[in-house]
Every structure is written in structure tokens, then in C-alpha cells.
Length: 357
Ligand SMILES: *Cc1c(COP(=O)(O)O)cnc(C)c1O
Image 1: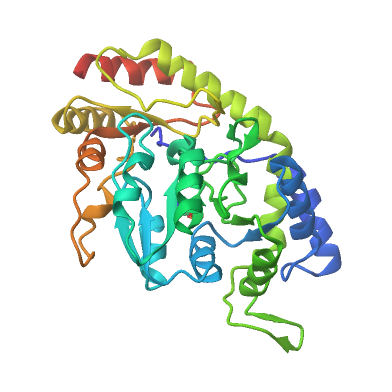
Image 2: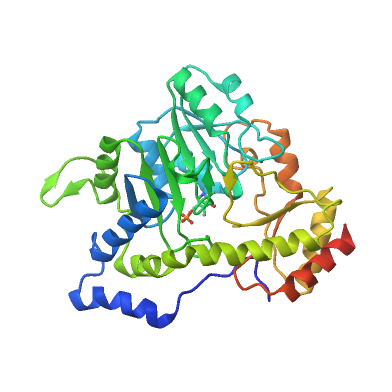
């Protein structure tokens, strides 16, 4: 079976050599040496000042809303993973969906202002598939209306925009280091804040709101362990190699797929991509379902990433229409993409897809 994704793993011996440092100290969690070293290296790699390693990429979304005091309306994208919307609901705020740009599939910045009300407090957008949102326009709107900007940058590790890491934009950016992501720590993630005071509060939130015997605020447990940090320390030096290997697979698809019949999202010119996904947009949902079924018969799994459009989640109280997102989410499919996907397999997948479109 060819899965839609396959976790990159470092050499076992290399992992054990790093984990042994935690073993020798009998210290495997609570802001240990490996967690601190990983944070230092991540800040260096990403060129950011305040970064915290967390247990996943979902709690940081909730912590971001909490630390910025967001309780009312949050303008957000309908085309993302469900964690984006759920974090808003979990914090008791109200998601207000603004439709996506049909080319980048990110929130359509030109439609944001029309959705702003007296209750709007923040914009939470996703750089979907690592494609940058219109960060300039979003920043200008936020400034004009006094809104906070949070980016769910779960797909954006290794992506740059205008020469800077895509994770350096917004008041807060979050990332996921889940095993299925381009850079991973098994389970894990991070939260990046522009403001030092915000970062200090997030450090408290991550660890129950207290430092030693001093209790400062509410908090949660969003820490991560030395075992996970060790995985990150192994994988980080390989990130260039990982992205390059993914790029070759990506280009192989581009060369072999009949791109006259299949659409793809459009990337910004000033961006470097991490080749996290290979999304294709078919003419109709019917074709998508056929392609998916035939690939599965041939032991190839794909993923409807993202479906449904999040404004159509069944548990939402109010219905909002986002025609572009609803249409695309019915027609978009992620094809397998991982570092050691062979040329033969890509060729086989493309032959099946081309036959059906
Ligand atoms: C993966 C993902 C998350 C959640 O990250 P976890 O580490 O699995 O909690 C959030 N948002 C988006 C867009 C994602 O793809």
C-alpha cells in the first residue's frame, strides 16, 4: 500500500545517541536540555525571536486566542484542517468564515473587510499547503481595524516569503510537528510570538501557569518531552535534504500529470515552497471519486485534503456560505508525496489519473 504520506525517520542509532543524553540525566520532560536546544536551533533556522516547543500544533492555536484575549468574532478560512475552526470554538469565540481566493486557496484578503463587525477581534488564517496568505494586505487591514493576526502555519515549515520564514508573520504563528508534516518530532508543534510579553505569558500557559512555587495565571499542559525533542534534533539538520527529496517527487508529478485537465493551486512568486503536499483539483467531484476509488484498488491511498469546507461542519450554529471553498473542497485531492516515493510509483499513479481525467 502506498500511503498518502510516509513519516521521514532519522537513523535509529542517531536518535538513540541523542536520547541517551536525557537517559543519562534521568530527565525526560519539563523543559529539559534537549527541548531547550531544539528551541534554540529552531529559532536560528526560522530567524524568529520567541518560539516555544509544544506538545502538538493544536494547543498553540488555542493558546494564541487565549493570550491575545480573543473572545468574540474571529475571521477565519473555511479551507484548512478542522483544528483551525475548532480552536476558535474551543475558546468560546465565534468563527466568521471569509471565502478563499480561487488561485492560492488561502483566505481572500479582499473579502475580509466586508466581514468585520464591532465584535471582530482577530483574523486566524492558514497558509494552506504552505502557500502564503496575502500577509501584507491582512496586516494592513488588521492595523486599520485594530485586529490581531494569528497564522495557522502548520503546513509552512521550511517555506519562506520575501526571504523570511513564513512562520515569522502575524502577531502569532503556530506550527505542527506531527509525524505527517514536513518537519516532525513524532507529536509536537510550536508557537511563535512577535511580542516578548506575549511570549512570556505563553511560557506560563504552556506549563500550568506557574513557575516553581509561584502561581501567576491560568495555564494548560502544552509541554513536550525530551524524547520528542530528540527526534526534532535528529530531523532538523536533514530538513534541506527532506525538502529537496520532496521537490524531486513534486516535479516528477508535474512532468507526468496531464495538467491540461487538472488544476493546481497557484503559488506566490516571492515564496519558497516546502513541497508538503501534492494537491490536484479535478473538473468535477465525480472524477475525483473515480480517481480515488481506482487508485485505492491499485493500493494507492489519497486524501480529501481539505473536505468538507469548514463553514459546512455539521456542528456549527450558524451557516455561512463560501461558494469558492465549497466548490474546491469537493474537487481537491492530495496525492501521495513523501521523500522516498519512487519514480516508478509516481509514474504508475500519474498513468491512472491521466486515464480517468
Ligand atoms: C496538522 C494541522 C494542525 C494540527 O496539528 P497537530 O500537531 O496534529 O495538533 C492544525 N492546523 C493545520 C492546518 C494542520 O494541517
